[in-house]
Image 1 (cartoon, rainbow, N blue to C red):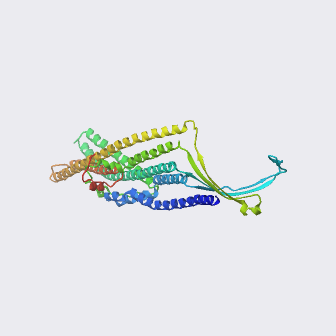
Image 2: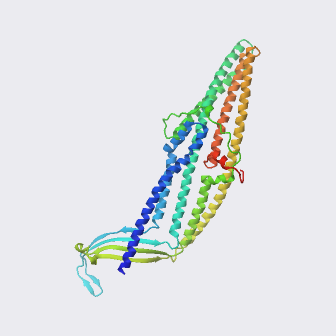
Image 3: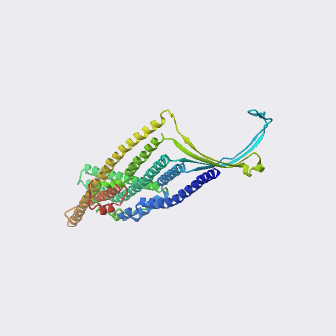
Length: 472
């Protein structure tokens, strides 16, 4: 019998050590994969398509410095620790609960007819205790699977943070590039308008135009200066926003010129509906259904009895000098069944709660599918529309440039005045502003489509879309 007890206790201790070592080895492997995943979340290859090394460098700097991404990473680590806690509940538990006690002299102790006068006693108890809940119904394993699914949801939330943050940063950066160009052109417009006002003033002084003509030109000049002031303010605000993204309020924000940005004109015209399966919110909705499914099964198994194996080995003596003697050795083992006869309806309420949560998760999953398809549709339509607008603005700029060249030629031959040339130049500058704005608006819309498809390289979607099953 003693050999059986010793073997059972030894098995409990061995299981605890082996399972702990296995879990530690698995954790080390997972850490190596996580860093690679986070780098993939940045999708540097996609941002390089815009032909802007500064943007690609800033995206990498976001990964290193941004506080929101660090918070998202910490939430993942918190989830990993929760998984470890749940997994630990599946393993044997080993503890040491030593006890050194002295019973002082007290009144006589009676044990039936036996009397111990002036009872006093030392006690030395040094046991190692091991216990293990036999997971007959798989309840503990299901609980850990549920927690693991919650961790996967948190990981997808981290991925969504990467996609949203890099997209927001890039859009803000492009808006700053656009504002730089608009400020440059607006300064030229103000200069041209100031020349127009001076020439109109001379015409008025010579009686060649009315005072209303002069006032209108002066009024238009003030409005153009106001536009310049607003653009300059927007420029400063956008720079401040980028500094916050990069967690450096003193950083100099360098940027590329608007002309050097590549226009991504060969993006996919048709996208498969299955593309939404790569979106973080879609994966989260799927994982939520699986997680709550585990919770429902756990709630059902909670009605069943539990069985706990326990064992103890150690020393128990009443004299310190005899604590290592054979009679002081302590060993025991057994199985303890546990079953709740009445819990006031708590377990049934928990089961109903989990079922309601499961139904809610199913509705959320269906809603996510619909909203995801809508977002991809809207973003794709916006990309197509903005590309058309950009091409129309580019064509209008070409025509305005031709008109300006023609007006200069007419001025050279005396068929047009210098004032007519200034008007034509001003109109061309305004058209340049519209063309630059439409170009950046198109690039920002491509970022919206990138975000809508779950942070995937849109060119890889083009390659994979050979036979679309369903276009959206």
